[in-house]
Length: 249
Image (cartoon, rainbow, N blue to C red):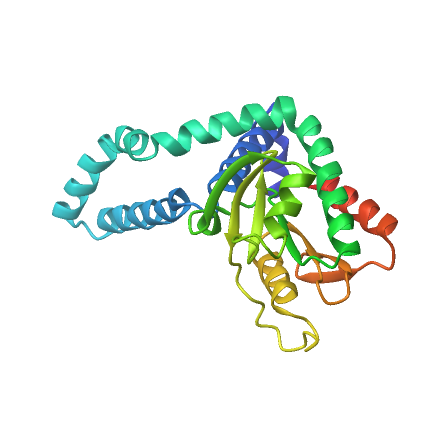
């Protein structure tokens, strides 16, 4: 039976499936962490309810869903016009400008982290990857400025009114500051870790973001990624690791 199925599959069918899978994956990555993702889950539940109404012959429910789905595309475009526009813009940026943005961004992040480490200025820098962080961005202070070493340092300087919390870097810009991240709930985490380190680990457990932490107690630089926190004995290893993680993302 399985052999018969595979015999009927052509190379173009495999390519077709891979392309569609990639498109679906990219769409999910773009909307994850947004209200569009929550709406998508709701739509999936409604589709399930529609099929149940077909099975159990619930005529009124089926009529309601049938009329809703007829206008579904128009409703989605109206409700999510801002998200659609932003997603198309991000796709263009990612395709044409990602390498240039990434290189310049990392240079400034690395310089700022080393500068603050030498002066023991505490910092928490979140670099967004594939997983959307809009649920945290929407609750933070909008900045929307080009990334620069000077701006990063000025934000985290103790005299700054917005030095508490994290900054989130998104699409080559500082999206927000004064962002408060979820703390890790893992019990095995060292008690010596402060709030910044626990927040960095907490976000890395919930997303694929790369988070740079500078300790104001000892000036040590750490990176949180994938639920793990890594300390670096020297700045060269920090730079190498950060560039490697961003390149992989």
